[in-house]
Length: 430
Ligand SMILES: [Mn+2]
Image (cartoon, rainbow, N blue to C red; front, side):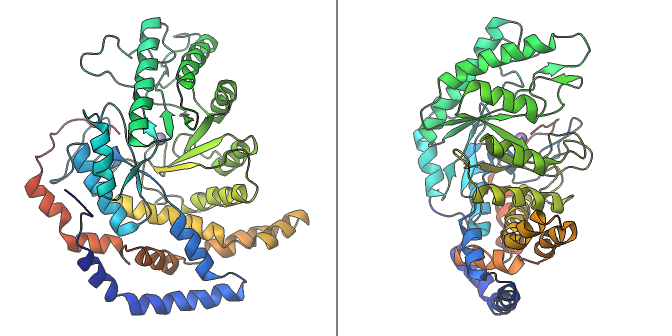
C-alpha cells in the first residue's frame, strides 16, 4: 500500500465542521495567554515540532500474565502494525516515528521495510532488543538471565542479538538501541548481586563497542518483574553507574512505570540531566506498579512535572541533550489506535503546559524562597486548558481536530476486521 492510510478528504470535512468553534476557543485562549505575556502562536509552533515515537508492539492488544483478549482487525505482523501507527500519525500528527522490537518485527528485507514505512509517512526510532524471552531454535535459554547470565555462551548469544539489532537499525535509519534486560533473581542468595552486575557491564561493553559513531545506547531500568527479588539494572542509580562506565554514547532511559511507588520521577529526570545522561523516556502511567496504563490517565500532574523538568533541561542543555520519547504501555481493554491517540495528546499537552510556565516568576520565587508563589507558577500553567493549541497544531499539520472521533468515523478497524486474519487467543505480554 502507498500513501497515508485514511482519506484526506474525510479528515478535511471533519475539521471543517469544527474549525469555527476551534478558532473561537483558540483566540480566546490566545488573549488569556497574552495577558500573561505568553504568545500562543509560539507555543503552538513548539507543540507542532514536538514528537513522540509509537512502539510497534503498542499497536496490538497487550495482555497480562492471565490472558489477552484480541479485537477483530488488530495487526498481526509488522506491515499491519506500521499501517496502524500511520493512522495514529495521520490523525494525531505527533507520532512520526515507530520504535521496532526484535525479533518480534523480523523481516527478510529491512530496506524494503524502511521504504514501506516512509510511504506511510513514518520513520524508525530506537531499536529494542529482546533477551527476556526465548525464541524458537535459539541455542541457549535466557531462563537464568541474558547479559548477566553466569553461562558465557548465554551472554555471547545476548550480545550477538543486540549487535544484530544495531545492524538492522542501521538499515532502518535508527540512531539508538534500547536495552532492557529482565535479568534478576527471585530468591535471596540466588545470585551474587555484585558479580551479576559485573557480568552485565562486561557484556554491555561489547554491545557498546559495536555502536556506530552517531548512535546511542539507552539503558532502561526496571525495579522488578519478571524478577521479584532483585533486578540487575533495577533503578536509575544502577542505570547511571552503568552508563557512566560504558561511555558517552550510553544514556539512561526512564520508563515512568519502572520505579517504586511514590518515587519522585521528576527529580530523577533532573538528576540524570545534570550528569548528561538523560537519554530517553517511555511514557505510560501506573496505579499500583508497572501496570502500563495509558499516559496521563492516572497522574497527569506527574507527567506535567516531568515535562517541567524537561523544559528546564532544554533551557540549560547538557552534553547531547536530545531525549528519545516513546509511548510504552499495554492496551488491554481499548483499541490500541485510540489509546495511542489519547496518550500522544496527553503527552503533548503536558509539554504545552510546561512551556507556558512563567519561568521568570518561578525562578524569582525560587531564589526568594517564596514557596507559594513558586508553586503557583506551576499551578497556573497546569490548570490552563491547552486543548485548542494542540487541536490547532494538529489541524495545521493535516491531522484531525478530534482524532478519536475522526478515527471512529473512518471505519478503519471494521475494514481491517474484514481484511486481516484473526489473532489467536492466549497469554500476552508487551
Ligand atoms: Mn519501557
